[in-house]
Image (cartoon, rainbow, N blue to C red; front, side):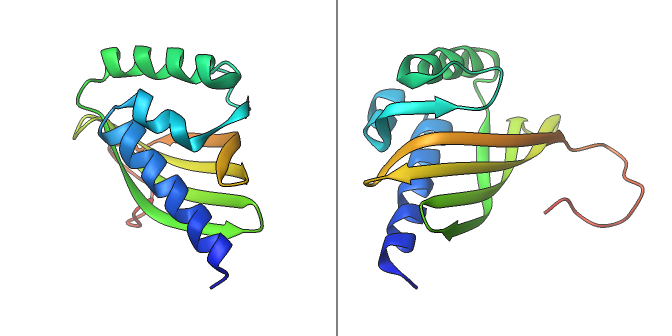
Length: 127
């Protein structure tokens, strides 16, 4: 594997663990570039917008955590298939997050999020 792809994947893994599981925004900030572009319409651009979003999310869902199911990389992009447990065993989502990195820093983000239904039309897992 291209070492830059492996490094980018590890940066995103570390970012997830620090921000979403340890809930340590100050420590996670080292993974974010000076210019951070956000495509989720519920989150503001820049590090300030991201901090405001996660401060609110962590108050609303203090027990939330994520499990990375798949992490793929191509060029400057890292894509994650994520099991988001906002309220474990009660409110869970499947998400796809796409990050663009520059010089080892996350500088752009897109996502698509889908709630995991209690009953599905098939017996396949979302993961």
